[in-house]
Image (cartoon, rainbow, N blue to C red; front, side, top):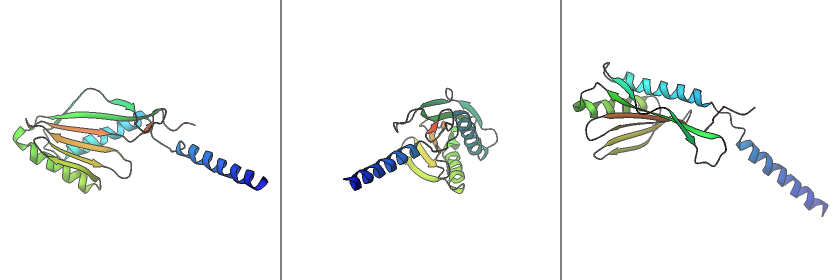
Length: 155
């Protein structure tokens, strides 16, 4: 009986330690995620012709993650790329694709239907970058952070 109780106590300690460890993960905060998003967007635009200009689509948003964690959010930001000839949209998406691939990001998905969309993920920080061209030749770049603690890692 005593052996069973010790074993049960050991199992409970390991379970509790493991569950708590899941929330010990160190993350950046929302402001730092927004800054990283801006870097990714600017790096993508830097490979486009120099007249490219960004127009924010709404404001930066954060939303609860779908991972069921309390106080965990994703930060997302989207921009229209303006002042580029619409007829060059396909070539410009290829430039972004090449940049993300050469940067070591992993291709998540690629769609070449009416609206071309590419999606890459940086394996080092799990940020996901998307670029798409709609039927009118307009380019949209979006970046989303991984799940992070909204205020950074709790102390």
